[in-house]
Structure formats: structure tokens, C-alpha cells
Length: 309
Image 1 (tube, rainbow, N blue to C red):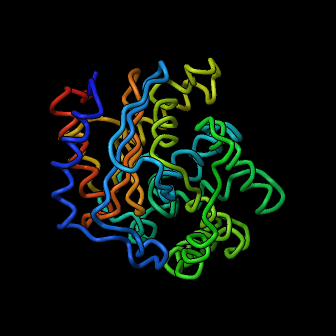
Image 2: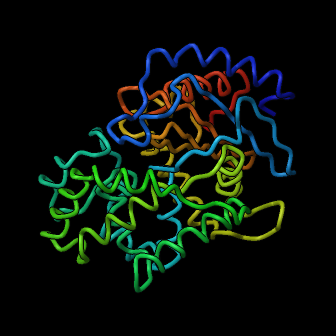
């Protein structure tokens, strides 16, 4: 068991919070630039329904790249692994999450994995539905089911801010469209993708989603198989190999749990067979990961031997 009490967790949060001075918020997305860089909070959700936490866990955070795991799970359920992985690869990349470089040197020009922006755009393109609204509602309903929270929605301000500044993602989309990896209107796809990234929830709901993935797709509190075991396994594997952008290898060695970060400062952890973790710390390192969030996970992993390796 990682922590017996919230007091233990609070002490670790205060230790990790010292790192925030070395990070900066994602101000290249104007709406995210408003976050308080000193903030740090965590919730740990157990399969028996217990939750321990520290910090302001009710603070809402947008999922950003954490949503890539959930959209991948939905698309794998919709279309099956063969269809999906014909169009997006399974290999980690040493490049930044928004890089176009590997697309130009890979034949065919499919993205290396679903956790980089190019791959996530291809995955979002595969969400079934006739309109952006219908496709987004399918994804949002799936998120609500995983979090067991029907109040989860999205932040219109963040979605709009991301849409208006998404020129690099537009470039990725046009490149993918040129190579026939996607075949829909680019603005329509970006509308869907920025809403996906702007889905927001608190640390508690994020930890619960992590728990469901960690428990092989079963929500132990409802008994429901929310996603098939094999798809949960695929998601955990991508979280380990690609979940922390181009710091994933170091993260696997130092911390060793399946995790996915987002540039809002969120981190979702799925400790296999044990519990889920939701973290919010908006000050980011140079790779785009929560600087204090990673330190906090490192302290947890070392103190309570959480590494799966």
C-alpha cells in the first residue's frame, strides 16, 4: 500500500512542490497560461473505493494529452487493433510530441505511435460518428463512464484557445491528409481534437480512470468491464513506452508505472492491479511533463516500491 494516510501524502507533496520553481506553465496555449505554477495535488484511488489525497483535488484540469489514452481505447473498441495499427504505429520516438520530422522520413508516412500529436490526430480521426458533435459526445460519454461521473464536461475557453493557436497541429493534419492517412476536413478534425483535449475533471476522477485501466478495464466498484482486458493492456503498454513524451524511457527506469501526462500539468497513473493516481501540477519541465508531478511519483515509487519492473 503506497500511503497509509493523507498526512504521509501531504508531506510528499510539500517535498515535491519545491520543484515547481524550476518549471513553467504552458503559456503557448493562452488559457493554460493562467494556471498557478505553485499548485500541486494528488488523489490515489483504490479498488475498494478508498481514496487518499493531498492538495486541492477538486480543482478542474483539462486532460490534454491524457485524453489520447482514452480516445485510443474507444477507437480500438470501435474498429479493432488491426485497423487502428495499419494507420498508426506502436513504436516510441525520441522526438518531441509535436514533431513532424519522423513523418517525413517514415514510409508509409504514418505516425510512430498514438501518444504523439500526429498519432493522436489519426486516432481522433477514427472516432465513429456523422458529425463532430456526435463523435465528441461518444468520446465524452466513454470518459464519463470510465470516471463514473456524468458531470464531466469540457472547457470551452481552453478548446477555443487551443483551436485558435493550433497551427502546428494543422500542419500535421495537412501532411497526414496529403499522404492519405486522414481524409476529413482539417478544421473539422481540429474542432473535435481540441474539444477532446479540453475535457476536464478533478484529480479524483482522473485517479478513478487510472484505476480502471490498472484493473484491466474493470471498474471494481460497479463490477462493470468498461473496456476489454486486451485493450486495457495495450493502453498500459503505450503509457509505459510513450506516455511521458520523450522522457518515457527515463520515467520507466526511475518510476516504472504506466502513466500519461498532459501539458495542463495533469498526470494519470495506472499501477497494475493496485490503484489509480491523478496528479495536477501545472509547472512543466522542458519535455512538457509536470515537473513536481514527476518528482512526486518518484518519491511515491521509491518509498513504496511501485515500479512494475
